[in-house]
Image 1 (cartoon, helix red, strand yellow):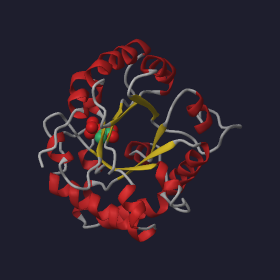
Image 2 (tube, rainbow, N blue to C red):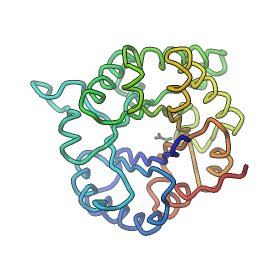
Image 3 (cartoon, helix red, strand yellow):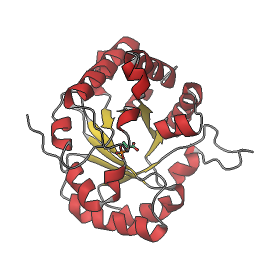
Amino acid sequence: MRTPMIAGNWKLHKTLAESSALVRELMPAVAANQVVEIVVAPVFTALDKVAEAIAGSNIKLAAQNCYSQPQGAFTGEVSPPLLKDVGCQYVIIGHSERRQLFGESDELINSKAHALAKTGLGSILCIGETLDEREADQMFDVLRRQVRLGLKNLSAEQMAGVVIAYEPVWAIGTGKTASDAQAQEAHAFIRALLTELYDKPTANATRILYGGSVKPDNVDNLMSQPDVDGALVGGASLKAEDFARIVNFQTTT
Ligand code: PEP
């Protein structure tokens, strides 16, 4: 009942020409896919160009970050209304690189989630534990805190626009993927938490993506886990052939 989502996070990669070329190579390779919601998140400067290229296709546009205020004296920031204006339907918030390299707090991330809900844009809220936290048996506490604070005061109705991405920090860009069982365990925990914070229908309707070194050769097994509803893909989204194979995953169950 949950539409799978495969989202590509291009991070700080690709010029205008390269972004356009990547998406033009991707489009025919995924055009026949009617079952997956396909999303790409280029750098801010390439959003307009990519929006133009994917117009009328089955690929949607996301930004990698936003600020919480619509406008004002916030030098260097980009707001949800401006991202909507350029054609975005989703914004990734709380990515571990933003938390770790730019000191983003759960409170700031929550203010972005509210701003996106107010603007009518979807959020892809990233959460995930570090290796130290996992080894210290703090994984569930960390996930609980990030979910509770990240979604604070968002209504069940607003949750319809929220996608959660579980991305264990130790698996991002490292080539180390969580095992299928580790991913399922975390996703089931997050879904149970959503039942506790909201209700069962909301928890059952919310998509939970896995992120962390998803590749063509591991996507099928990950997507076969009952609570894995899609993937947020970094490195492998930069190659059209690899990303298309991930979009066109085959479940094994
Ligand atoms: C990411 O950046 O969200 C990510 C999961 O990266 P990678 O697929 O490269 O691990």
